[in-house]
Image 1: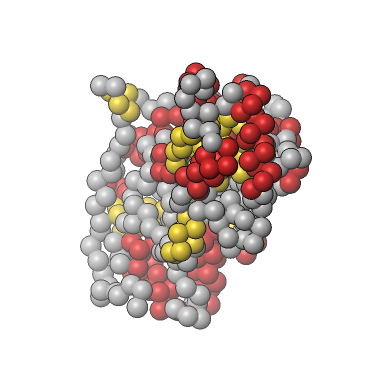
Image 2: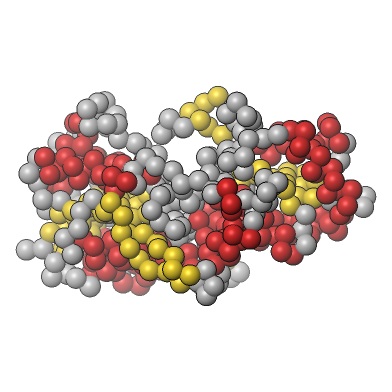
Length: 418
C-alpha cells in the first residue's frame, strides 16, 4: 500500500506558492502507485500539530490545476517556528505521531529558511525514532535569500511588480514635477537582503532617475541627500526605492518599530515616511511615498512567467526527489546562462540551507551604492520575463478556492506552543 504525503505552506505567502503546491499534488497523482493521498496542513505546520489534515484528493483535477494561477496560500500558512529539538522535542514528536497515524511517509515543506530548518530537524528526528520519512523542502521566499539556489520562487514576480511600479509611478511624478511632487519614495520588503529593492533599478533602463537604499549598504544620510538633490536638479524629479531593512551604520533599522514578529525578527515598517520626511526637511522638496507591503507579493495578475514556471517545476522536482529516495534535500535552480537565460533543476542538502541567508553581492550594486550594476541587471532581467495572466471574468481575475475538507482525527487533542 503506498504511503501518503503531507504538504504544508510556511511563512509569508507569494503569488506563486500555489504553483508549487500544484506541482507537488499533480506529480504525486501521476505516481498513485507509490504515493497515496496528499494531505495539506491547514494553516501550515499548525495543521500537522493540530491534526487538521486537508484531503486534497477531494479536489478536482481542474481545481488543482487552477492553483497555478491563484495567489496566496490555498491551504493557509502560518508564522510559527518550532523551537530547537532540545527546547521543545514534544512538538517534533507530535509531528511524527500524526504522520504515523495517517500513514504519511513523505513530508514536503514549502517555505523559506526557517521552514528549511524545521524540515531538516523533522528528518533528523524521524531517523532517530526509526520512522521512515522522506523530508523534502520546497523553496519559497520573495526575499530571494535562500542559499544554494540561483533564485527563489516568489521573487521573480515581486521583482516584476516592483520594477513595473517604480516605472509607472515615476512617470506619474515626472508629469507633475514642474509644479508638484519632485520625490517619490517606494518602500519594499527585504529585511537583510536587497534583492527586491534592486528590481526598482531596472526602471533606470527607461531613463528614470532612481536611488536605491540597500540593506547591504549602511545608510549615509549626507551622501543620500546629496544624491537626491543632484538628481532632482538635473531631471526635475527622482524616485527612491528603499528596502524595509535599510539601516544606519550602527545596525539600527530606519524603520524599526521596537516589536518582534512570530519568528523573533524585528518588526519593520515605515522606512518610506522616514526617508521622505528626511528629504523634505533637508531639501524642501515636495514628496509622496508608498509602501508596497502585501501588494507586491500577492500581485498574481502581473506575475513573471519565469517565476510561475520555476515554482511549479520545483514542486514537481520535490516529489521526484522523494521517489528517488532522497531525504533532507531541497530542489534548487542552477543558472547556466544569462543570455539566453537557461537553468537546470538541481538539489541542495538541507543542513547547508537551514538558517542561512544569501545577500546581494557587492558587484551586483553600482559603485556609488545607489543602483544596480550591469552584473546585477543581467541577474535580474531574466527573472521578470514573460507574462502568465490568470483568466478574467467581469473585469476581475478568476482565482480558485479549495474545499479544504479535513480527514477525521485519530489522536488526542494537542496543545500547541506549550
